[in-house]
Length: 400
Image (cartoon, rainbow, N blue to C red; front, side, top):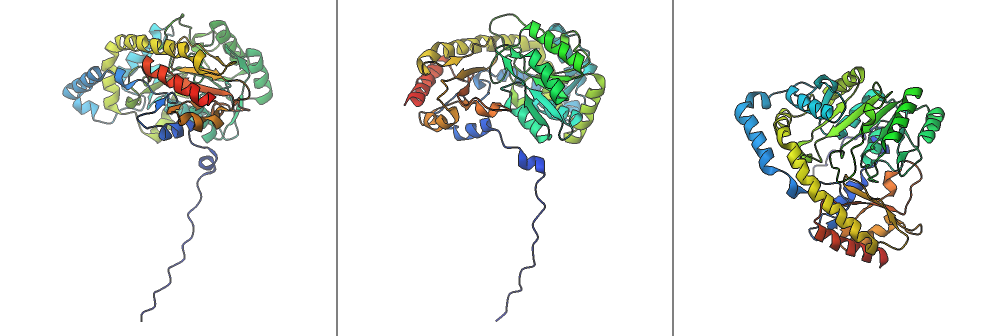
């Protein structure tokens, strides 16, 4: 009888990096995975309505690019981005009141990559980042992965309070302030122009980078457009403006951009070379062609989303417990709800999901002490009829 040789000893592999072990996943993504059933009315996601994608227009743009410029479209490209797309973006940004040259821009693989590149270019482990409270969740993930200290700045219905910001800068000595000042995720609020000017003045006095994220700015349903912080006096040399085509064209294209002062933009380009070399060429060229009809498409989307926002606002009084309050955004994709203090929206979520409806609890959006009575609702993905039914289910889940 042959005796088997003992297995050679096996040493464990080295552990994951500390930053990978210390940053959790996205609660929003986790909720979407659990609530993907077809019978679910999902107010949890931040997903554009797929039936509004301009399939024919985007397909025509890709067809034209591949028919006329296949060798270019299927080849490697420059890290900074295709000249045609940068020229188109520069024209749109200039048209909205911020003079911009194509060379001021870096095309990114979604604006989420822009955030990651900025964290690489600006932050050392232990550096401090100031954020709104509550704050866009995926930004908190980026800054956490970079090893930054993330400190919330108190604010009000108009956003970050300038006096509180000045005190936080004095106390914390941060590298940057991250803001979504227009139709903020998760609250839907918009920072008024005078407040933006005050924020810019604080940054100018204190030597602070401002990262101004604007993925929703073109989705305005009423009210007047507010100038970017990047256009405010004192902000010119210290504001990075981020934009995205995900909400107005299609998220699957993964196209975003950043506008930044030259030295920082070059540092981000070097970081991008180490990440993916460049954003897909064919997507960039197709998007550049589609820009000719984008405004007409956005106008159609605005009309539909505005009606869906109104449907959700109309149904909330009957769906929510007495004493609840909620935002009325002038645009964007989200409503922010605060239930009475005794409610814990994270604990209530399983009961609500049993009714085949879902929201995102507010707690994960806070860098500091969370308000556990809050929740976020996305109103753009469902029709008004589905929204009405979803709110009826939500009312049963919260009250049952």
